Image (tube, rainbow, N blue to C red; front, side, top):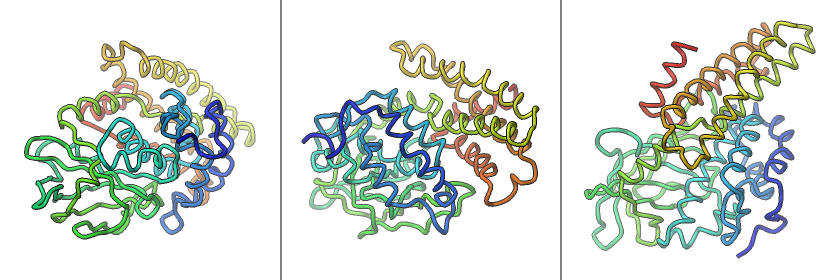
Length: 362
């Protein structure tokens, strides 16, 4: 029990994030590169700084800050090194699920996840897909479950210690299991995907072939419709990573204007900021409002508008930098690709419609 050695619950979480910003900025290009990729040593460094523990309960060994603090930390990290942030942010799902569950795997790993001693990943995005479940759970012959199907997206394979997987039962419940993140009988990972961005995140597909899951590996069992309602309530909100990237791009546009004596770049940055920051304030206001359910349409619209603004801002920075932005060593093209990635992260049909509406009527 108690927090990770060296961490204190009164530490400023955003200050903790900013302490590692220089390291992440230097590391960002390598993190994106498939041949180099996100470094486990840096993930361990972030865990030691408390950045895996921001919102985990103090009783479990976390720092006990609220969701707003967690969001602001994600803004800082994603604006510095999106690939490393993306591997780190997967940890939040198994951490939050085990904090609220009394199933055996939750009891076993709750404190280790809260403290960042064990790094977690997820393979559950398929639960958002309409139609037949992508991964099925059948009762095991001698207890437990057997999983069959394919989960297309699992980020951090080979970097994380545990992976949260999910399968749907005939009773339309979701069985969540926490497993060591490596191949086993009935589980095979694909080769890492060749991605246009985040290429160093070691994102794979997981193939389940009648994989046995013992009762001790079950972390939770939840009604699928209930899970979807809870998930739908979060995906409508603008992701803090998008705001972090937008801030980074605006700051870099300002720097370009000054360093290269390009007044038009400064004007562009000023116009972007005048639009962006009031939108950001509204995002936070609605995200943490007790009446947030009344504003689903506006929250969706904000996600679409800020996504469009981020894509446009990243393209504007390329224009401001000129031909040098096309060098592989220049970050401008990576930021443009990251803006593209953030369009499809946790995208549902409603989110897609809001994004397309924003592109149609910016």
